[in-house]
Image 1 (tube, rainbow, N blue to C red):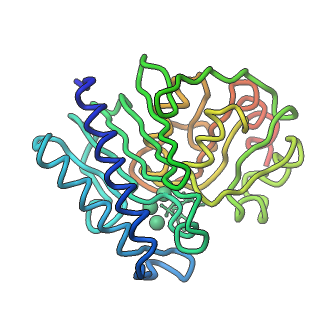
Image 2 (cartoon, rainbow, N blue to C red):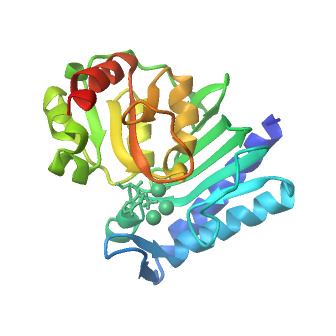
Length: 258
Ligand code: 2AM
Ligand code: CA
Ligand code: CA
Ligand code: CA
């Protein structure tokens, strides 16, 4: 079960974590490479994750946690209540731009997304909501965007997939009103919630999409791995989310013809 109390607690943790991140930007940030020179982690990613995990362990000690950094990046199953955390989504933007990054938290129960939170830290905009609750930015309720065709909207994309035309991403981009590349999955999913983008194509891990899925599902978007199969929540995979009409067009006219 989730509750209003849980929503308020998560919002408080996020505000506290965001305040810590904003202050820490004034100090020296320690940047390390993970798998390669563009795959980065900082002490702030790790400290933010530790802060959130301590809160969950204190208030919800029986729950499981899946999170990107420091030994929390695999989970045996999605049974029970599972918290899925990306402490800083868009670490490259955090390091290079000091903006356009998010904190993301999702609460799942037996594999079903119940609550999602995407916090654009430097804009101080918290997008949040839940199954049958609606979607909010801070205290304001958002309206569900209109379903639109691929030719009528902007689409967020992973730059590598676009450049290499993986799964016809280049052609999908040309059939749209244009592509946008933010370098942050949270920012791309926020753009869909606001009705600015009709979709998003990328290569993502579960903590990149877990919170956003709860919110875009509430707004009637369709999502899956790029071939149309359910997302596994267990590895990095090619990801597609879009308004229903654009989703079907991308599947039928591009992905399965590529
Ligand atoms: P991250 O900053 O939390 O790692 C950028 O295209 C988006 O993909 C970001 O949301 C980024 O999240 C995510 N991503 C996941 N794995 C990545 C990797 N190995 N290199 C770059 N971005 C990655
Ligand atoms: Ca990362
Ligand atoms: Ca991420
Ligand atoms: Ca991250």
